[in-house]
Length: 70
Image (cartoon, rainbow, N blue to C red):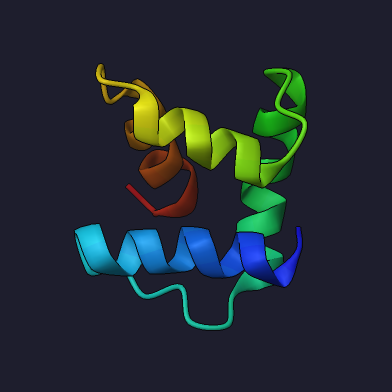
């Protein structure tokens, strides 16, 4: 995960949900890496692009579920 990818996801979560991932890049990467790899995403950037275009909201829900303790 590049710093730019981390900032994009962090800023999205903070702006839309008020979830502050602060400097938790390692945690974020650990929670997302397997999901992205198993679902054929080539990068975090690609996932975010598709998530923002997904009108069903399923990818956004998955992102929040993976990064929060339910």
